[in-house]
Image 1 (cartoon, rainbow, N blue to C red):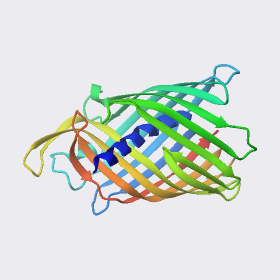
Image 2: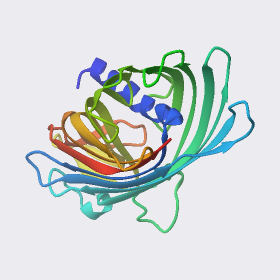
Image 3: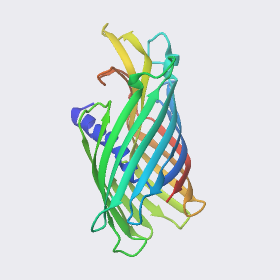
Image 4: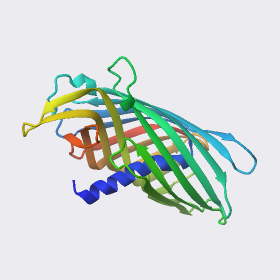
Length: 299
């Protein structure tokens, strides 16, 4: 991969989490399946997450509690020469973030979040220090409310820092959303750049480019010899995809909806990394199909 492409992907990857700080989802359950092209390998995930706002005062100040759980299945049947591939089959992620947000002048809002996560294959008897990840973010949101509904727009700018990560400095993020017509909206930035069409109050269709990712610590580090005869040590596994897809949403009620996405990866990388987050082996990098479906409860 070219250096400028890697930098762009890393910026999008880190921005993904910060936009969740302004997430309008109160709860979400979904399932993702990504078969790997020309391979018996596959990735699948079950995810459940929530955002629970606690009102602090009548001036628009909230504390937001955001737990999440992910069951990641990384089935590796080829492309890996280690003694026990079963250590890669299941990674679990537990996360908790605490957010604080309040209104400012001129329709601006400030928010910040701190969080900790545990992502590991849990093959040892307990937790290890490398199982933990720490995140912090701050952001500003500008809402344009002087237009008649449903025409609205919103700008989000901010910074995010995570450790461990492949880039060890805060990364900028920006996202702009606009509903410019009763039947149309668009968003530019992360986690999705999209165009959406509203057929009616219950049915929408969108075309988008977005991200999906996975990271897990290997509690039993894996050693292997690469094709050049060099000894390599793998300490964690990661996946990072850029996806182009179509998405359909059906609203059961004003706030409860079913959604399904189907698309194809623009960039697809499943890699093993060492403790310095350097790539030691690429398991899959061929583009492939992407499927995701679930239920959301929105504000």
